[in-house]
Image (cartoon, rainbow, N blue to C red; front, top):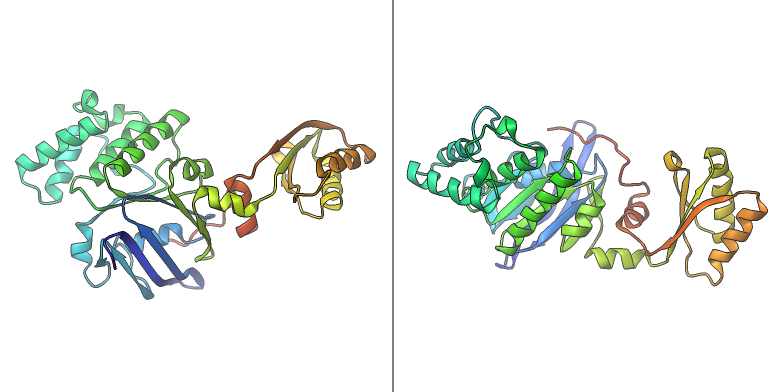
Length: 323
């Protein structure tokens, strides 16, 4: 395993009772990059992170973090990785500074080293002004940034971020995005699991999509969107009854199956590069008596990629097996 590879996963499988969470998963994460892992709930994302962070043993296969086998040499691997889960694992009754010093001592840093490292990270994550406030007074974004800081106390080569912006408002998400970009700029390899496609599009250098425990697509965001290829048209109609009729009309007009969003009475369909495809859609909808409230022509998005390779939208959920 070369020094240019930060994480290597070979044929990892894991079963929980009747549920096959991972089924021969393979990953290669280049060092110094942000690597996005996408997939619906139940795809195996969190299970993979638990195995890579030594919290769970695989049934078969091998996994390496910074060249260290996470099963055979778990203790040494833990000093080369950091983990921030879906919810901030900080003590709300302590100050931000107190939290980081406590975690530093848990990592066996000396008192002096823990204090110095805490001060460095508070400054780095723009928390110095709030360092001596109790965490219960922090915003959601500030708590997540403090959690990221705690995961970096030992300066890990690889940081696993499992759904890091779950539950945050737009400002909090933007704060975490800025922090993650800063980590990559300083050479830390970040493996990011997320269900927010815009998050992966904004942050990730490369993306892997997994479903039912297996890789179903991989590439840069641009490469994945190019695989979908055709322009898409999004059409909003007056109501759900009209949407049902529009679905049939769009399928007949293009030969493709549209994606439906009943909550906003919208259908999205790939034009497939057909000459005059947009005009045909408008004409056929008009002939069927369907009035178009709004229509947008756009290039493919990661949501289109997700739908193509998994057969459902990113917001669909199935409930991942818990360890």
